[in-house]
Length: 187
Image 1 (cartoon, rainbow, N blue to C red):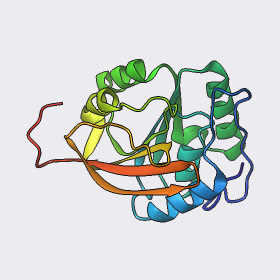
Image 2: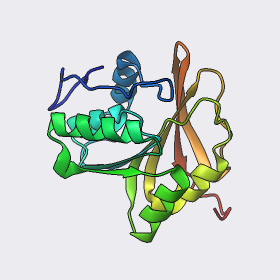
Image 3: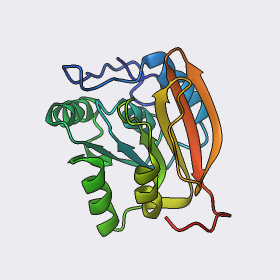
């Protein structure tokens, strides 16, 4: 794997060993970030279920201001730290080893807010209502949530998030959501 564009363009990154992590392919990341061009510069990024950290590292390379990477897997977190160090992004990142509930709880307690969120959960996790409801208080008003999922199997989400667009490349699908400010449903 490599960083596609920006300050770390062409630099290699590692993926955690084993079958528990499914890194986002280079061609998918390239297409995804072409769609995110205006969202990334200066943004604060949350990478929940971060795996190798490829998505948030690509965002940092393209001008994101800061990224928080979370994963429950010890090997994934170690790989994230190694990738961050190799790319020189130590000052622009925070790594948390925690499941998504604990990570969100801690970030809310600290008053964190994000402009861009990457959700790349295991493909078997098809109901994201609880995840998105929990994230709501971490999102800036016009935040963008990018969900990676199996192509043709968009996950279940709460009505308080508006689907903005979706694309698929082979087995990988990506759907973009924004908090629906016109929806009065409480999360």
